[in-house]
Length: 115
Image (cartoon, rainbow, N blue to C red; front, side, top):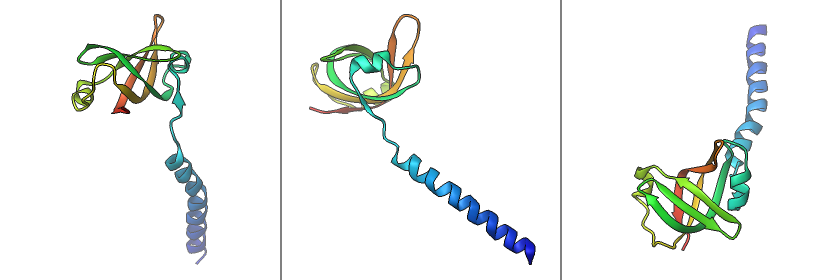
């Protein structure tokens, strides 16, 4: 009978610990960043940047700008091929910052046309 109580207590403790973690993960939102903030952000920072397309460099690379600067955006052609936009469109890009010694690049996980 004691082992049943111990098992029930362990389950109760596990549920008590897990519930706030699940809620915290579900409510986690990626913050909006200006281009300048994204460029200065540490490597692997998750960001959302909204800006105007300056140039589509090739089928997987864009140059995006806002009032604070420009950033190179790398987008998998599977994602970019599904988004239709005009040359000066406003895009919202969610992804992570990839920093190297030369520059910061935003690796896009999703792209959405804002206007």
